[in-house]
Image 1 (cartoon, rainbow, N blue to C red):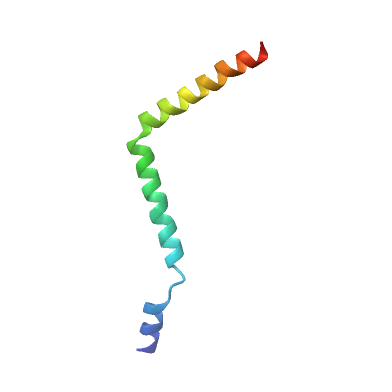
Image 2: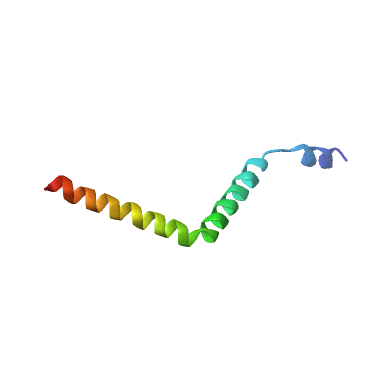
Length: 57
């Protein structure tokens, strides 16, 4: 009986489970908003490229 109580109160694996859940949520958000994120990143790189050309002369 004592072994079961110790097993139930052990919290070593809690951090791992939390990290996995956070990763699952982040991956889900990326999959849901993939198109919007792609457009945003493309716009950012276009802005960087055009501003870099202005700096070069």
